[in-house]
Length: 450
Image 1: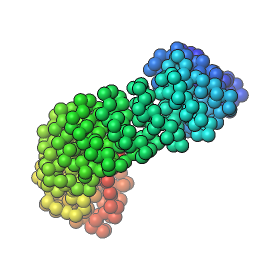
Image 2: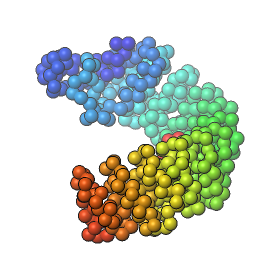
Image 3: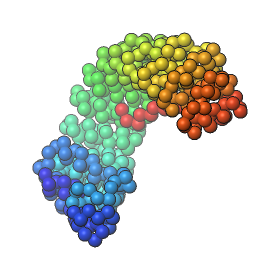
Image 4: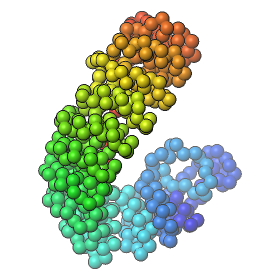
C-alpha cells in the first residue's frame, strides 16, 4: 500500500526550506518529476477502489495545485503539470497496458492519455489488432481519453469486435472523438444484447449530435429493459433535438424509474417552447411525482421554457412541496415565467414568503420582483419586517423597490440594518423608485454528460 501511494504521487524527496518535510518549514522549494517505473511498480497489487481514485489523479496534474497547502503529511508530491515522457518511458508504459494486474494497466492507460498524439497514436492503433482483447480494450481507453481523432478510422474497425469490452470501448471512443462516420455502426450497436455496449453507443450518439439519431433513440427510451439506457437515451435526445423527440420524452415522464423521469423532464427543457401535451405532463409531474429530483427538474423545465399555463401549479409547489429544493426551483420558475413583464402573482406564492428555508424565501422574493404585482407589496413589506437573513432582506428590498419604491414601513425596516448593501438599496429605491441593478437570475442546466 505504501509503495502504491508513493508511486502514484511520484517517488522522490520533497524539500521544504532546504530541509525534510518533517521539519515543518513553510516554503516548498521543488516538486518531483514523473518516475514511470516507480508509478507502475507501486500500482501492482493495489486495491481496486484505491487504484481507481489514484489513477484518475494521474491525468489531473496541474489542476487545483494552486489551492493545495505547501506542506502535507505525504512524503512526496506529484509534478505540477503533465510532462512529455521520453521515448523509452512511453515504451515502458505501453508494455504495461497489457499487464495482468488491472491497476498497473489502468494507471498506464491514464498516463498515456496525457501524452501528445504523435507519441501514442501509432502504438495504440497497432494494439487494436492484438490477439489479446484486454490489450485491444485498453488501447481504446487511451485513444478515447486522449481524444486522438486521427485514429477514428482505426477505432471504427473494431466497433463490431466479438468481445464485449472492446465493442463497448470502441463505441465510447467514437463518441469522445465526435466521429460522425461511426454513426451507422453506433445505430446498430444500440441493439446489442449487452447493456454496457448499448449504453456506450447511446452516450456516443448524444455526443455526436446528429438529428438522424433521434429516430433510433426514441424506441430505446420507451422499451429498453435497462433504466440506465433509457435515461441516457432521454439525455441524448435532449442534447440532439428535444423538439423531434418531444412526444416520446413526454411519455417517458411516466416511466417506472425515477431517474428516467427526471432526465426526460430535463431533456424537455432544452427547447424554447413546450407542446401542450408536454406541458400538461410536466405539471402533473410537479404535483404528483413521488421523486423530489423528478419534481424539481419538471419545475425547472416549466420555468426555463416560460410555460405560462404552469404558473399556478408552480406557485402551489413553491408553497407546499415537501422538498425545499423543489420549493425553491418552483418559486424561481414562477418568476422566470413572469420574466420582468409583470402579471398577477398566484396567491399561493405569497405563502412561500414564510418558508422555513431562506433559499426558498429568497427565490420567492425574486419571483415577486419579476411579476411586479402591486397587490403583493404589503405581503413583501410584512415579510421584510420579520426577515432576519440579510441576503433575503436584500431580495425583498429589490422586490419592493420594483413595485414603486417601497413604503414607510419598508424604510423603517431598512434603516435598522447593519448591512451597508441593504442601506444602499434602500436609498436607490427612494431616489429612483426602482433598483438600478436588474438582478438577473438565469438558471441554465447544461449536461455535457448523462
